[in-house]
Picture 1 (cartoon, rainbow, N blue to C red):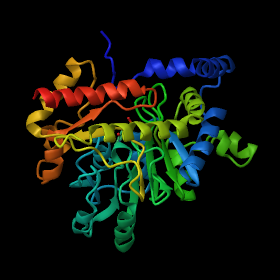
Picture 2 (picture 1 turned 30 degrees about the horizontal axis):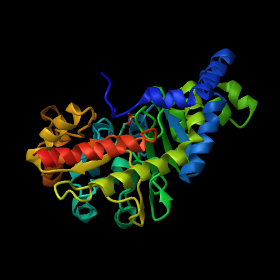
Picture 3 (picture 1 turned 180 degrees about the vertical axis):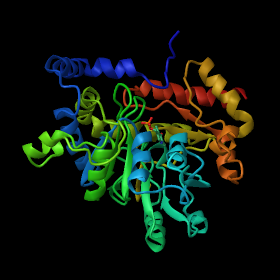
Picture 4 (picture 1 turned 90 degrees about the vertical axis):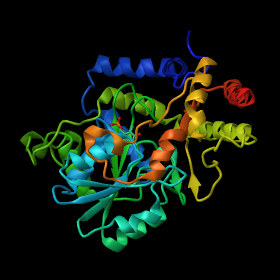
Length: 382
Ligand SMILES: *Cc1c(COP(=O)(O)O)cnc(C)c1O
């Protein structure tokens, strides 16, 4: 039996866009436009414009967008990069795999980097800060950029969960030296596999990233003359991390719907916040109208008593509401990773108390109200 309220619903979104998506994919297949063609070029242009940054370098994932950002900046052995423990593991992996040392700090009650702890984590070895805009909420970029400026640190934003989120009217991914984005299917803007992008205002860095993601070659659309294109020069040792043209085609179709989708996400968050406001046992996420933040609710995360969490998850699932818990084991307590020396009490507390309710634009008001009702029933019966 499918869930009455599944946590994601890929087939539903596809059926809403079927004619456009099918037309796009069939067109690309018929023309053989598979690799670094018009759809990649157009997507990079449109996405940079949407974020408000000068350049967008598409990649095969956000994992690579983050890894290549640090790599392009020459961050490596002997360097420290400050980030948070409460994030998807790819953030931390991008630091470690460049040979640098991750310095994990705790998060505040909005699940983002606790900026009060930032300055204390800076050492003479610190080269960069990686703020993670979790759940579709921007970090306090005012404070973070101030510390970065004071100590001359690069800022690489992990904006995987924050397409369209804003702080003080500017979008996530437009503050730092680079921003990394994910187009994994479940993300706010998702393709049909893996996809990602780096945004940056730094032209030299963008050029380097275009080479790094394509085995050191300059794609034809980036060359200045036909002579240069013919030469097939290798500029640098690179990686293979391009965004597939078919995935870019899918993203180009979906880009048109992005703004209304974000508004719908915020409306649903408002409904949840209101519907759950009478339950003292449930701590909702920050509300959508909390200036200077503009949250896009990649996830709708509530916090409950640790002793209630697993029972509530089970109760919701028994009542046909699918739930996600991100994350039950904090990264620094994953024993294989050797990060146990970090002391992150709020991250650990959060890992015992959070759960995410379904939230995506295709959810009906009736489904949202149903979820609210089931949460109420749990506390009535508890
Ligand atoms: C999804 C995600 C990533 C990784 O993105 P991929 O495109 O799957 O590589 C990185 N960081 C955060 C916070 C994410 O949510």
